[in-house]
Length: 165
Image (tube, rainbow, N blue to C red; front, side):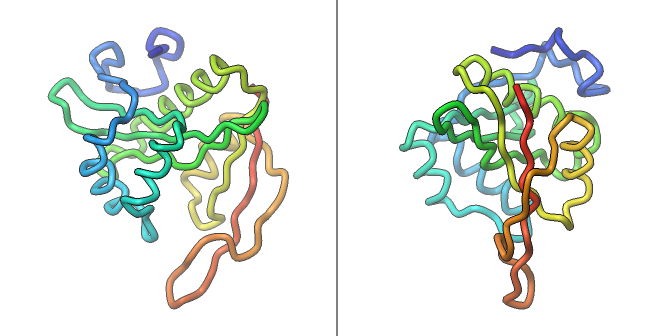
């Protein structure tokens, strides 16, 4: 399923043909949760990941040649739309194109499963992710008030974006 040759520039400095891209398994969750906790101020719980896998949501991990977890994504499919529930890249290697690579892969996965569009939410404060999604072609279609937990028992809105596959 890896479309490594499709977008060679999407992960500058990475030999995409040597990366291991596989469906997420329950055995991956210890590492996935550790990465999640490193990169998000309000991370998913172990239960969130277990429930997603048990529900059959498409979920994939990306590892380097040594088996080190680099990133992952999870989708939820609803009728003809994929919802990108979670995507993350290890903090130390962010900005090197692996986020875009995972976005390419999530879109390819959704297309292959017959989806026509992809929906996601992103924090307005997550400027890096917002920029990636906008450059990719996602368009803002709405806003969810108080969607995300934030510091000091506050809430942060979510920008809702859609991309036509």
